[in-house]
Image 1 (tube, rainbow, N blue to C red):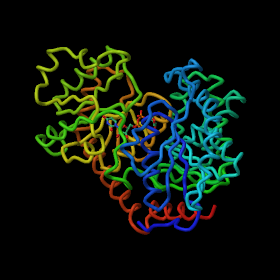
Image 2 (cartoon, rainbow, N blue to C red; image 1 turned 90 degrees about the vertical axis):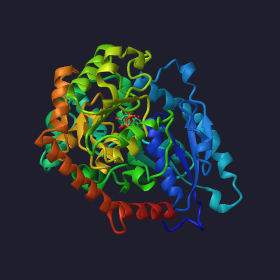
Image 3 (cartoon, rainbow, N blue to C red; image 1 turned 45 degrees about the vertical axis):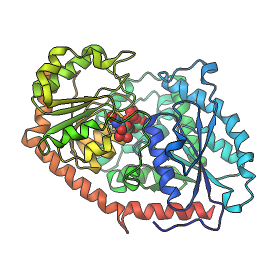
Image 4 (tube, rainbow, N blue to C red; image 1 turned 120 degrees about the vertical axis):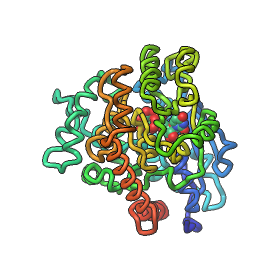
Length: 454
Ligand code: UDX
């Protein structure tokens, strides 16, 4: 990549939101901009801290989020974000003058690039008259959801896309069909409204917006975002494809599963993972296990610590399950997911539809069996199943018979084969955006120029 930023202030201060689904894409983005010649400082709360020795090219500054004193737990999602935004502001304000003392002009701060959930960083940027850049690690359509939700709530509506999707094309219309029901399951709390309003407000004041998405995947949503916010939007996703050898996993990856994959037939394996946050109960874990066993399909299953709350999950699987599946099943606590999805043996991905997993799956042309749990997963599933048509949804509760049937539909039947073909076309289309002249390639160059113009 062409190096830029040689003459001007070129230190970028990144502010992380401390969960793996957000830390990973933010570190990937930092790495991408580092390759463009910018220096990187990572400011992060002292919770789920990234390992500095994995990223020697960055400077790390831990700040206290005072989370223990605030008595919030990560499980109370919205209260946790609210506390982080209140408690991290002071420590970030203290850091900035220290960083600004750099004698070399190129080492001065150029701008603050923050995870959209850490919206307080925009106020800090405003205070120091620095440009702020808001990053969405979720699909662009979530920006619309957040923008209209507080107003609709005041008016008594809960279907948040209703107002933005009227008179829109087929993509937003399709998203609208089922998402309302899914989102209204979430109880509306003050902290939830606060997050949505504050995030939207910070995006109105920022100097640029970066979304980990691809133009052609979310054409209509991106056009609408550009209408709602005056800051330019840069879509340089999927970030992970621009830094292929980069891993920032907080959990140790079990690479033995790659040797197991090598022994499996092409496109025969269903890979199963629900990301880093979703959880099931003990009964659901057993239904999953027997659904997988009864499908007779080879499977690679990530049973991470915490998948079943506060229990040693692997110990919950009965002995006769291990005997039944034998060599046909491989179970790990954490997998090198990007490598797994790129492996020829993998023919399907049973996923919770986290946005990173979604982008990683379509980047490798792998069709999906979808079981969304919360938040943006309820929107990503609509893209996967209704807009791009590369997956099917497991709509019911987790029950072994329904799981077995859904796996067979995806892995063995013509319907699944058609989805696999469309997923491969999507993968090829996506590759073109990364090449010289492609939308992602151009957007990245435009972003680097924008930062240099500050
Ligand atoms: C969370 C939310 O749940 C998600 O909806 C939101 O879009 C981002 O924040 P998470 O649940 O972790 O993220 O899901 P996802 O976004 O899919 O990210 C999971 C990441 O962990 C992926 O990058 C995946 O490659 C990685 N992973 C997962 C592994 O490396 N190994 C595994 O075994 C499982």
